[in-house]
Image (cartoon, rainbow, N blue to C red):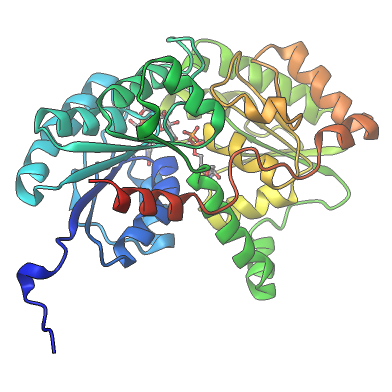
Length: 384
Ligand code: UD1
Ligand code: UDP
């Protein structure tokens, strides 16, 4: 009988997964779960705490273990604060765990600074959700640059779509290091959406959280938080929502992001407006429930733009450009910017014209099939 000694066993890859905000946590969850369950990796999770409450909501829902927490969030933090605190915090974690691979996701300052920290320690980086480009360095700001910095550092590029791969190839990235996987947010969405669908009690509990929802009125779900919309954009969005609410046949549900630059304006402009419900940031399950209940979604969020097409709802994107043009090409998303007239004309058309509505509604999956995380783990195991 051949007995394997410890030294014959294939060495486990030491994988450090780093994230700090709500969308990164939601998008890293299925990859982290797959890595933690795979014997080929010794996986550790480091949260920067760039977000606190929003991040903790996801950690609680997913039960992911947190091995390191840099706990950096400060109220009203600047980009300088976040960058500096992630960079210095990461140095210690990298020295302690000594990973072979650092995995980052997307375009946040956490992702950019954690990739930079790994580079300074000469550790290979895997970049999930690589290659999205608006081709405008100022929008989304600072995310377009953050994503490009991560791309310059990364060894492995997990591109959600063929277009994202093409963007990387056009910038000179070796195609052999790019893998088109789909977006992991669809893995997360399909998982939790199926959980809701399969559980009548959960459905009833989620419904009971919104007793004020009136089934006779169409529900418009709204989110907004982009930095490039702080300079008047959020005010214009609020103005458009006030006009929409005055139609009387719609109800607007707006979970307000805790960023003081958002909350201050939204509370002042939309507090106590009939047919507008400002609510706290929702945990993921109730938020998925609201997306499923909605007639139409208005957002400037990246993740929401990716999720809504998979649920068969139209989405009006309150941005001038997008690094996620696949939804627009599929006909399920439309760019309306923060121009009041444009928001109103597009929303009113979808509310009043069933043909226009049906043209945009309908299930599309330009961003993935729910198997992105499996592909990412398989590729990482294949490459040294
Ligand atoms: C960050 C990301 C953005 C991402 C967004 C997701 C950067 C530069 N920005 O923007 O790409 O789309 O997260 O939501 O990385 N706050 C809380 N509690 C929280 C989270 C935030 O109170 O749980 C408040 C704090 O006052 C904090 C402020 O919001 O200082 C801003 O947070 P920050 O992460 O810097 O910016 P976001 O606008 O959330
Ligand atoms: N989301 C949530 N609760 C909310 C609003 C959004 O769980 O109240 C989820 C949403 O489904 C998506 C993610 O958070 O998966 C998007 O996060 P956000 O809009 O903050 O960031 P972005 O995607 O723009 O970077």
